[in-house]
Length: 242
Length: 106
Image (cartoon, rainbow over all chains, first blue to last red; front, side):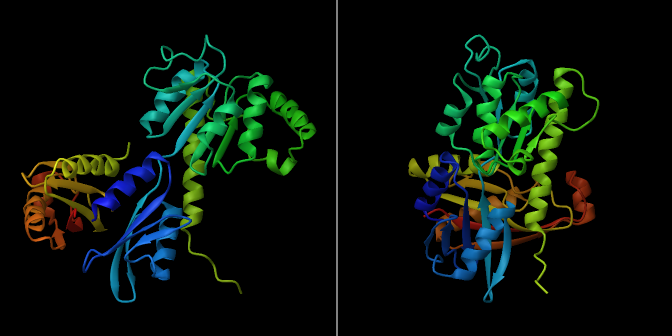
């Protein structure tokens, strides 16, 4: 491995940029393959580049045989990120549980009394409106967004921004009635039914959760499920068109 | 932070301080092996380790090869089979096999 390669891997992590390192096992020749570019000794080999991008999609490192050479594809994808909108009681259970599941957790709430590091030790807390915060953070396909405030002023702009991005999960706390009202408001804001259907609401798996911690478990159960099914679908062999 | 990136961070620090460094990576596994493909072990020229490529049973052998790789600069492909009996002794799931690639950081 070249020292520049090492530096590039660290840089990609800091920028939450997915990258795969392809290494030819016979001589350690390598290439760094991103979604939009490829660099290094092996970057000109299209078969290697495509295999690396596929491995990135499913988030799985593997050794492949390409043109008689063994190539190891080591995939470095950013850790899944959970953005919690609303520094409320449920968030206080959800944030540490999600961190335990190796999510990179951020809590967003413009209300100073709620968004304190004292209420969320060890968690990144942003005291701002969600749509502003999202713009700065950049929503990506490995991000999940959860709204917990119950307050349309705070939840709606967050949901609207999330729906316009390719985050893998959107969930909104609230009863069926609240969710139906939310749907009416969104129709006025130009969000189609199809777009709105991406929101999991009422949020979480139906496990009869009552306490904040139980609700946090039901939300995380659903996020884990959605993420796993998505990766399974991506990993499934493509059926050839008849 | 994921383990692999923690390893690369430490390897980067060793390299920056002028040490000879090698990285070992699990590239293939068969059966029930303790660490998944992509798991890494960083080794410096004094034999210090960061990360892991097994539950501890092959690290000794990997470090030895890593020190050789730091000296001669040649990459190495190592095969380890863990027999049921050995696995029992070291407390691993039985019957796992792993292949480890070792290379110097240039």
